[in-house]
Amino acid sequence: MKILVAEDEPNIAKVYKIAFEQRGHEVIVAYNGIECLAEYSRRLGEAHSPNATPFDVVLLDYRMPKKDGMEVAREILTLVPKQRIIFVSAYVLETLQDAVKTLSKVVEMMQKPFEIDDLVSLVEDTNIWKGLEELNVNIKELRKMNATHEQLLGLYHGLKAIQKGRGISS
Image (cartoon, rainbow, N blue to C red; front, side, top):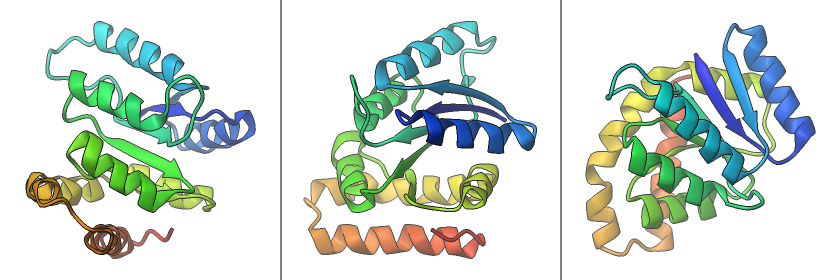
């Protein structure tokens, strides 16, 4: 897999890079949102097919310097709406709420702190992405009804259930 990691903490980024490379994945690391978008755009320009995504997955920290993860996700999804994005964040409810408002879709997320093997399992399990795509069919309706905190909490628990059904804890 080709993985783009946007993480402003160098030690955490290094752990991600080592873990994924040990599993045979190609990993590009960006240390802020602007670097992430530049690398994404560069790789998108190199894509041989107009429908291709330059990365199999983009891992985004929610809070980053220069441009936060949600802004980066919005710009990436404007370019490639089917790009798989996973937020790694200590602020999962805030991230989920922001994703519904800003992106009009639910994205995958992993709550910090976590075991690196759990993140690797999530990234490698493309069935979770398929299940999430099914959930996103109804996200526009959720946004229109101005979802309450409780409704978003229910959605969050649904996402956790999808992950646990695939054997991933977070």
